[in-house]
Image (cartoon, rainbow, N blue to C red; front, top):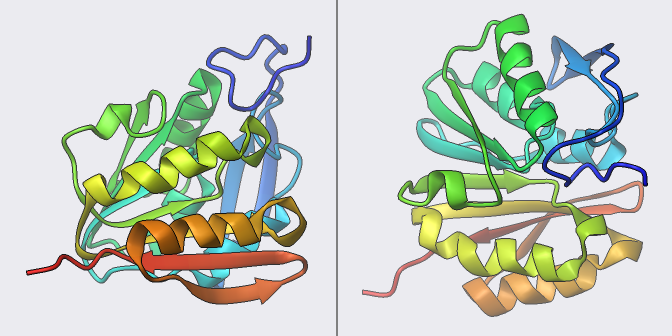
Length: 202
């Protein structure tokens, strides 16, 4: 049975690849391997999300379902004042994300292994950014959205990229239902980047 990138322990033999790419005008190198999401190239949705994501000037950011660490590492490099947490259920992805933080010389990063928000259960963030595991099913994506307000500070944002043909409209509806606001910050190549803001009622 083939690995899913949202499996805890990939059984595919470890073979290391290296991706070289420019994101937000900066050069990066990433080690990847089979058994993690989009290991041969930067996924188009991830690239669109990175190019359009809105980063806080300081505070805490969560890259949820980080894979080999590309979103969190770019965010940490752009803004060294941020404290970036990255989580993934996939043990190989977590190992690669730690290696890639070293490779790209970012120190303002903490990588944790576990399912969704469990590794950061008591932590609040100023931004949660994710290319969600859509192939795990919309139920999982909806869980990410529904639980996200518990992990956001006042004015914190949830930012999600979704393929238009793979549920982007339903994801936007769920974000609107959860936050009472949703904004499309990018629409490109069949993907949409959606942003909701956590606004507490006094």
